[in-house]
Amino acid sequence: MYICLEGIDGSGKSTQILLLEKWLSDYGYEVLRIFEPTNSSTGKLIREILKDPRATNDNFQKTLALLFAADRMVLMDTIEAAEEAGKAIISDRCFYSSIAYQNPQGVQNSKQRLDSDASWLYELNKFIKKPDMVILLDLDVEKAISRCDGSDSFENKVFLEKIRNRYLELAKTNDFFVINANNGINKIHEDIKKAVSPKIGRCI
Ligand code: ADP
Ligand code: TYD
Image 1 (cartoon, rainbow, N blue to C red):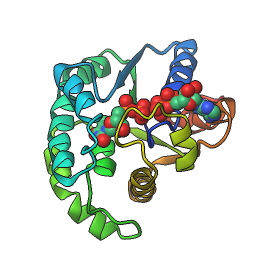
Image 2: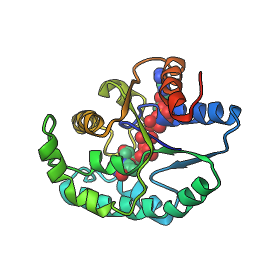
Image 3: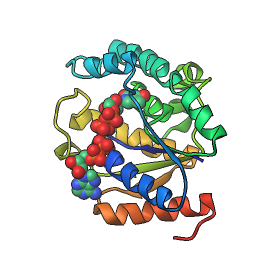
Image 4: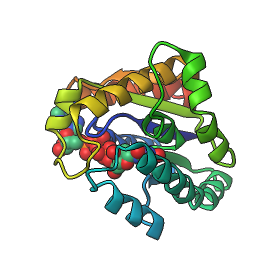
C-alpha cells in the first residue's frame, strides 16, 4: 500500500504522516516514510531555488518541474524494494504536487484544459510509480500561510489559492480522499484513519 498525503504548504501533512505511521506500526505494519523534495543533491538544489523570489515565474517553474521529476525518480528503487518487502509506504507529496504546482496555465473548473496544459508534466513523470491512495488535506490558504515560516516564495496567498483550487480539481478527477484540514489535529487523524481502514482491511 502506497499512500500519499498532498496539500498546500502548511496543510499539516508532516504532522499527520507521523500519526499515520504510528497507527500503522501499532497494527504491525512495517512502514517506509518518504518525502519530496528528498534529501538528495537534487532535492537540496530544489530547496535553494524555492527561496528565490522568482520561483513562481513560468521559466523557474519549468526548471523546477524537471528537477522535481529527477528528484522523485531517485525514490523509485526504494519504493519498489519496500513494496517487495510488504511494507506500507507513506509519502509526503508525490508527482501530483508537480501537476498542482508546476502548471502555470492550469485553470479551475475545466478538466480538459487542466489535463492538456499538464500533459508535458504527465509525460515527464511517466516512469514514476503512482500511489494507491492520495489523501488531500484541504484548508483555507490564510490559515495555511499562518502555519508556514515564510521562507519559500510559494508561501503567498495569491499563488497558494491557485494551487488549492488545482488540488480540488485533481481530487475530483483522480479520486483523492479530501479531508478538511481546518479541523484540529486529532479530528484530522480520525478522518484519515477512516479513509485508510477499508483500504487495508481494518476496522478503526
Ligand atoms: P506541512 O507538512 O503540510 O507543511 P506541518 O505538519 O509541518 O504541515 O504543519 C505546519 C504547522 O502547523 C506545524 O507547526 C504544525 O504543528 C501545525 N499544525 C499542523 N496541523 C495543525 C492543525 N490541525 N491545527 C493547528 N496547527 C496545526
Ligand atoms: P515541502 O517541504 O513539502 O513543504 P511544506 O511542508 O511547506 O508543504 O515542499 C516544499 C515545496 O515544494 C512546497 O512549496 C511544494 C513544492 N513542490 C512543488 O512545487 N512541486 C513538487 O513536485 C513537489 C514535490 C513539491
